[in-house]
Image (cartoon, rainbow, N blue to C red; front, side, top):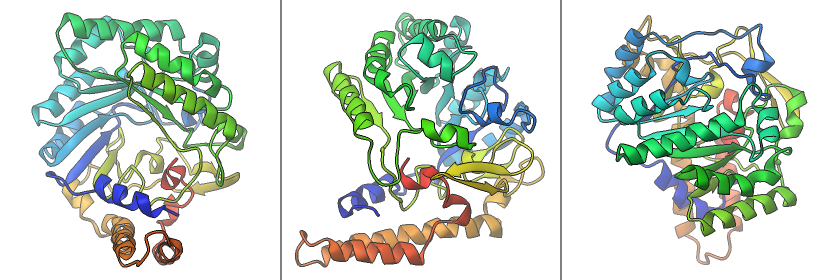
Length: 379
């Protein structure tokens, strides 16, 4: 249930802006040199399909970059493993897109950092899993914590040397039960390294039951201990003037998740178009996930490949339009619920709003493949 005071925020967040597409999330590579504890690549090594997106295929996609606000270079692999990654950034920037990428930081050498600055990358998100070496390396296995810290510091230093405000450096901290106590210290470390922003993220895709106990969020209530660490981290961030954002600790169904299937497209390394990265893992067989303690399995969602069809032909296909129709209807009823608030004689009596909202959501459910995805519940 979405609280009425948040409805306006959702409408503003998903408002229509100048370009028809908010973002293309593109997977440069499904390969990775690490074996992170929670990654499906580690969990399903025999089923994983490794590969890089050919640069000609990327150029083919770039014919539509003029319709896109943002290009985010990240999927299930490490983008810096792609030999043409700087060229990918340059191609998107040439079309006046804002460009970002997410990396594990291991390959963020001085030469790579210099190239990304020269190519005018807007934002780089570096993933960490602790404020101490042992904690981080126990989760992000194969990673060397001190090396990553040094790489981030070097990037921040190069920005100063080259008199560049970009890329904006965002530290993304994966919250688990084993590391959340280090969250406040990680905020201080991020500032010390030259970070520009800090994000506390949830373990939002859980491939097997053995990893379920790592998550810090809950279906019905916040963990007080976890909440205390987040509050301390937020206070620390405020003190050192570091922008801080954390994901909720309690599940709450949203009208449309932040992946925004109406305006965001995920394109895997092999050219497959999907609504989001969670519906398109580069593995053979079914996609399995644990949702609220229960195992679910589903087929990969791919509406077509750019290797065989034109992008807009796939986007406008009946099957893809039907999928988006679920979210278009939910956005419409969200506005209806928002308008219903204005008809109340007393804004303090919200029972009618909650009842109206529940009815609208029951009549317009999430697509079946999204009902067991934590992103659909604000996580």
